Amino acid sequence: MRPRELIFGAVAAGLLAMYLVFGSQLYASVGPVAAPPTPTPTAPRSEQPAPRVPGTLSFVIQGDVYVMRDAKFHHETSEGRNQQPGLSADGTVLVFARRQEIDGRRVLGTGGVVNARLGYSDLVTKPSAGGAESILLTGLVTRDQGGGFHRVAWNLSPAFSPDGRRVAFIQDDADGAADLVIIDVATKRPTPFSAGAELADPAWSPDGRTVATTTYNLETPGLLLWNIDRPGAATRVTGLPDGEPYRPSFSPDGKWLVYTLRRDGRNDLHAIEIATGRDVTLSGDGRSWNGVFSPDGRWVAFHREQDGVIDLYAMELADALTGGLPRPPVKLTAGQGIDGGSRPAWAR
Image 1: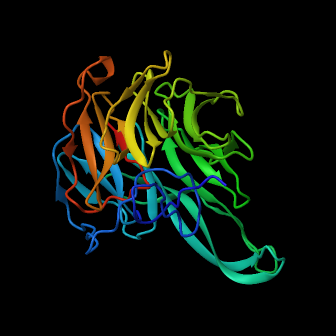
Image 2: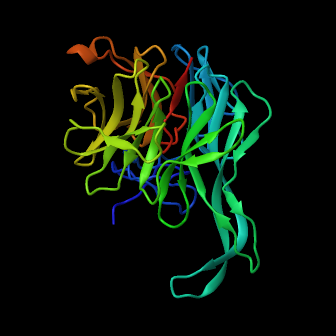
Image 3: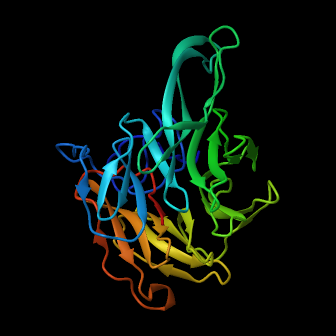
């Protein structure tokens, strides 16, 4: 069986990707994994200085969502159970997944029934500058219908549409499927776009007409482009190098996808021109992943592991997409220990 990433936890050992996902929840295998440093970095609880980059960035440290803007960053949650942040296009609203648990009962493979703590995840929205939270969608699908059995789901990797009216996410329904779903923010009505699939990492095109995902449905992982006007309609991105591509993210002009290529235990950033299939390597250290374009298309933010600690970096592309080289990356965090299972979000 294809390995699946463990999300919602700290990054474990080695340079193979395997994330701790909401307790025992399994998901797509990606990203390098660093040996835990000793001692474990302390998550900052006061505002921290950072190099100045344009716009607003969001990322996760030890299960909490942080926001970076104006050359500083601070935490916006404090439960230690949050992951996978997205930002509205104007940078004012966060959406993220929060792990929850409930006492219930579970049927074993042998047919027996045991008491169990059942895990699931809610999608939560919140102003990025602080304020009240709102549950966009709960993972407690159906509360106890008798006998202590609840129906739960993992709602993962939420991403705002460019107009902020919809959120694309992956719903893992505990039956082994991980499907693309799009929810209307105003009505909170979800629309499934796949059934029984193995998908991950949704990202919107800037015109709001396409959602890119990673797919694990075939023997070779790949990237899919979903037409949101036609649920169930997707095309596979061609021209990718050998290896396992994952976590696509559109450029602001919609012409490029930045993604991570996992090959021979190494993870590096690539960009592919969708129309031509021309692929560009953006990093070669084998320890860089989770790239996202800046709103102006001039930068890529990403995670990089060094000496067992993951930090957030930003790299100015310069003429890298036209045959040149990117500029040396800027380290945005200082060893606080970024959660490697959550790609950053970047907005205006």
